[in-house]
Image (tube, rainbow, N blue to C red; front, side, top):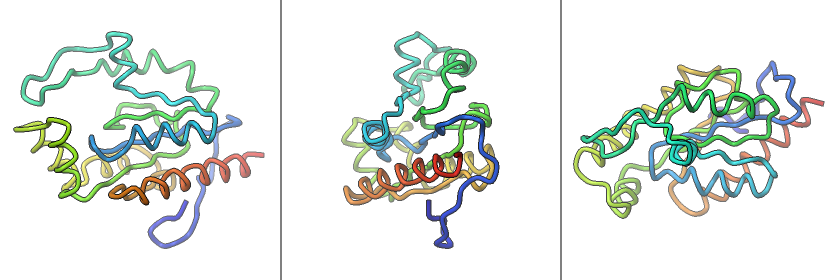
Amino acid sequence: LTHRDGTIKMASSQSSRNQPNILVVGTPGTGKSLTCAEVATKTGFEHINVGTLAKENSLYEGYDEILQCPIIDEDGIIDELEDVMETGGRIVEYHGCDFFPERWFDGVFVLRTDNTILYKRLEERGYSGMKLTNNIECEIFQTILEEAKDSYKAEIVFELTSNVPEDLEHNIDTIVQWIDEWKGHSL
């Protein structure tokens, strides 16, 4: 994967897995679900949407009235995923990343979207008020990118732009290429 300096880098110490696990994070509306679904189709990896997992298993601690969303049970999510993450070949998708064990992931991909584009996407989803404002501010202040950088080794965190359909295709190809390179380095 290409870092800002134009070089392609792999983590120096890979796990004992034969296939990597990756985490795809970003503010709602940045294209995580579509990106993950396409990467899963191209690689045969299992796509795990944490929001869906929480819903299917009732892994909630409550409901945030201000942000109009459920509060997931992070410990319950960890317990639910612990065994499946050991073998590799998983693409985990969520808005944040600071509660996942660092040992689970070999690559962390943060999708970023221009605020004007993101605002329109979120409005089309019915976001308004504090929920809309909070998510736009999250993107403006690079909250999720900083969270990823604080939670994982720098060499496994990658920032990808997700503004237009061409970006989507590029991001899918980039992640698939990264997976292929990881596999080549783990032999």
